[in-house]
Length: 263
Image (cartoon, rainbow, N blue to C red; front, side):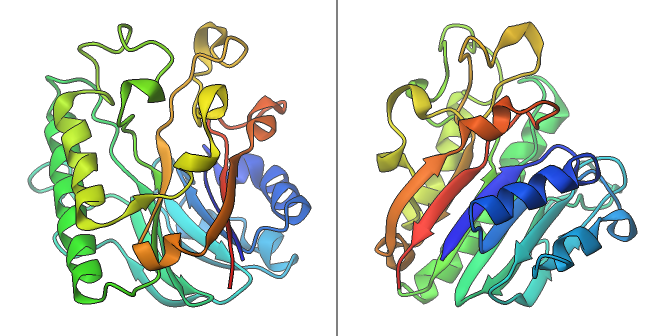
């Protein structure tokens, strides 16, 4: 099986590009983030025509997650128990969806950005990660043999090696000690950064801001991950970040991350 995760930064604007990429790379399951459309606006037919089923959780012109699969799409669940809202009285945001695809429990996650260290959205981000860690850690604890992947845009660079300039990010979100500690909770629970061993050095980044020519200068960040349960990690035999997808005209500011999974 070939599984990928990709923050597409508007599925409607890039549906043809996404479908073409999926068919060219023989993707079986794609976890999608930042779809930026309501469910009734999702370009489902573009994927159905190529033999894929789609489960989505949309939210108008922002957020939004989906799972696109040609190996089954069962037990779809939107959100997770204890998922916090961005503020009291506000509705939950469309940031998490999970489904069973080819025997693997696939999560598509769009972790809140945090905005700034003194912004309320930063506290929301930490609370969101804490709640997710509780749910997924409990699931893995109950069944150590479970096949689970937590895939998506985590909006956290867990080490200094995951950003182009650690000094530039000092005092900013994505690299703060609290965010890195929140990310580490998942690895302490047993989840594994399965792509890490296959993407060393300058090919590690998954995101390059549109501004200041960041992509051309390779001034990026690694913030997109597929954290696998130990049983699933044992099946990973290759992984790569497709920088070429980011280089295309009109591309998302994220590159897709791909995992190859054996039987």
